[in-house]
Image (cartoon, rainbow, N blue to C red; front, side, top):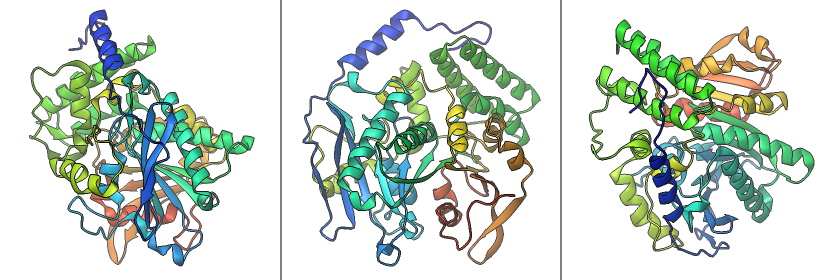
Length: 459
């Protein structure tokens, strides 16, 4: 793996084999892109949209039952991370959808506050697929183009939703998709080529600036007694090495170093759970024969891997949907998608956050205090790099505690200034809606203006 004493140079043969595998790995399934269906009562719809010839994106829309009492109820697009983790599966059944993995009602579903649109993005993820893996997206810009094409066709066939307040909520790597998507949507709306009521973007524990997280891990782990000073110092050398590779434009090398650093963290901190620092995950058993990008993808995407969820998605859910091609099997995550985007993995999208704020788009950032992979301190670090003119005002704005229902235990803190808001979520790791569902739902109501008070305010 990577050496900390010399730049990591991936063998040309390794890259050639990877690209050859991607180019020859084909599905050979042809979809009827007009296929869409739903439940008899009209509360659910799903289908495929052809974002490019041979590239088929699967979506699932839930209408809130509160639509009868609120004509202005928002529509939330949920973007999962990975890259390559399934929003239709994980975000839906593990986090915010109407049913749990056991197919039982979820009391904290975000349908209590919004209509929900899940999508398996990028193509190749979940039930989305490509007819040939040469059609996989190779960078976030290509993924954004696909998402814009998807939304253009989706709203074209759902004209009643064009005036509905539309929010993009993203988790983990999904934040990189969301920031670039938000910029693209604003540009199209301003040019008159897209007519939707785009209201804002929410970034939950998102991988906006990877290098800031790598530098944040060592002191954070030390503060939690998970490594000592010597261990923290050894980990910082990985961050320095990744930074050097990025400065030289070697982003794939930086991704590999990130993987080495994660393995070093696991060894030093006794398999600390990257998604909740209070836990230790001893379940990871990667084969010694799995190397390189495949190993990185398998470990990074392991958070979404659940045999129960896979059985549900490929069993009763597949049967319910009725339009999934026979040769497409749902999986929690796609190593191919991760590998195809590996050169973009360590790139940041701070510039896009700046563009959104400068354009007046509402931006919400929220972070679970127990998350390591996209830790709060790393998020605060990249936030300070913004060039947005409102940053000084945000920095001195007052932080306010938030509570859930009648519980007087502090559930979160929030700071707001102009069109930027930051939520520090207590007792939550990487998956905030799963760890602190009451606060997550309350936050959504605040973001979408359903709290009874103005969400954004000048401080």
